[in-house]
Length: 402
Image 1 (tube, rainbow, N blue to C red):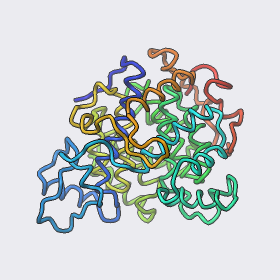
Image 2 (image 1 turned 180 degrees about the vertical axis):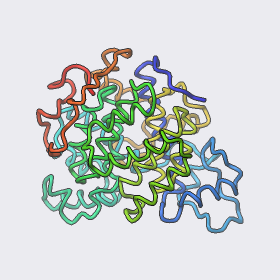
Image 3 (image 1 turned 30 degrees about the horizontal axis):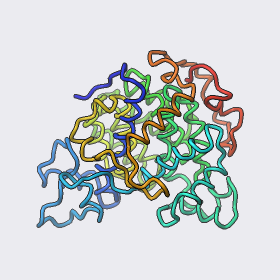
Image 4 (image 1 turned 60 degrees about the horizontal axis):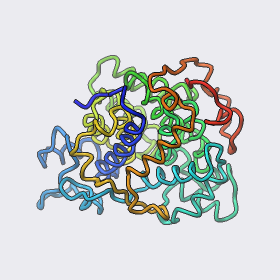
């Protein structure tokens, strides 16, 4: 068991988040196609390859396997073949978010997010809502029209996958992390697409100080409207977990309740992710394995679960079988970052965390405020600039976050 070490130094926790994100992304990447790689098919593949329980990266497919075609990138992201990370948008946007914060600081605007995309990210490496927003930027539209014009993907998972860096740089301060994630998300998303990103950023920030995964999940709920579908999905999974249903029974229930939304929509993916965190019960390997076995957008969910679990246990607590094959190297489509060292990216992130005024940055043993009035109200709009209501780290914000 690789349980949480609450006394772990901030730098190790942030490095754990980076390593966990890359490892979880690599675990889920070969089976990223939720309409084909269902939970049942994933488990049948794992039984076929004698990989249940899942405790390592996916094994390569047997030569005679039919009906189990992995994604084309599988040759560089399965067990025994990994030498550094594969390139993937789930990591590209994390790198790009770090570059944004290093360039513009915590008071960046949504317009500056768009400029960073145009300057650093190739158009053909964007997908769904991000591609629609990119196209709208090129055609001269500005936020929030970049998110709403000719974009049928506004509530898909894309903004959520960009959120982790805001949690890492606001350790123990989920409301601040959510404010940054919201400012990023509204470039390309609306509604539950934005709420999912805010929740994910707050979740990662809360992971630094929460005593249990459930406490982190609950604290993250405090930054989004209680009646939104993301919040309802999270509460539903938490209730079924508390009622002692099995992981399988819980996912069966939420699958029925979110049927029709599609495998890339934010809401069912948030449910799968929440189940992985709660049933993973603080164990790094179990959290990654259950999240990816949950199906849907497996590499995105695996990345967020790995980030959360890595923050909880720190880099030193991540088993070598997950950490060592990454060879401290990230492949990235973000201009200037291909081949970057994970350790260097983490060091830059830790510097920003130290500037943010987050609870951990100030005092690793501090207990964050649980004042519910700190959470944004359901009526608060997702503004595009660094509004005063954001309580931007290092400037307007003071004290612990709730």
